[in-house]
Image (cartoon, rainbow, N blue to C red; front, side, top):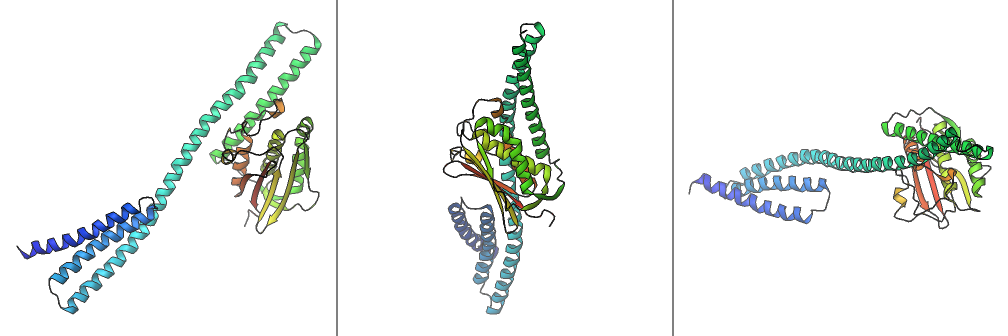
Length: 341
């Protein structure tokens, strides 16, 4: 057997042994991170080369000095290879995770779009059918007594307002999703925002017998877009009022933690099932199974209010969460105290 064939067999045997151990290690780590898999694969590759070189060098009966030179050369090459490989492996793992998250987010957005189309189609079809029927009745003279004509006119206005709110919510949500939202930030007193939200929801709260309360003092200021922040707070208060039963209470409070300003809206709706909590901010999710609203024109919504809240809060660099409190729910938004830093 020639020397070259013998050297090849020695190198092949050493490399195969290391490769077999690496295969076992990769199988045992099948559910671990991509970065760990890449790192193990690099170590196995470098170790297989090093094992082959060392085995061949030992078989050639090199002098201690020459063997030491070979080992130092292999070790230096292994360090460089592993350093470069781990660096690129980390980038590869990050890219793979990002791609997986992007695909999952796209899948969720697509499911949300399909659900949104179904909800909007339903929400528009029903009032449009009613409006058409009432308009035809008025035009054909089927209804001619003053009281019924007045009631029809009132109902047409109510349904038109509801559809206008739905279209407005759709436009706002499209701006958020398209990244076309431009925030004109300024120093905003939360006390003024909360006062306006309470005033805007007062008719709905009165019709449902719900009490809305807020502290009179201790309100912080925040650097935010006033119009968008007002919409966030109003949507949260309206949502809580809609799902709080008669004689219930909605409480608004706020404060400051380090570099964050927080505002919380708590209600006595009875709570949301745990499996629905992660979905309350999804597009078109209404949660009727969790909190059944009273069938009134004021109570009908397109399921977009909380999705808009999340989009506007995240556009400010903040976060919104929802939790159960035992007697109801607590929605908390956290915003950076100063967006300009």
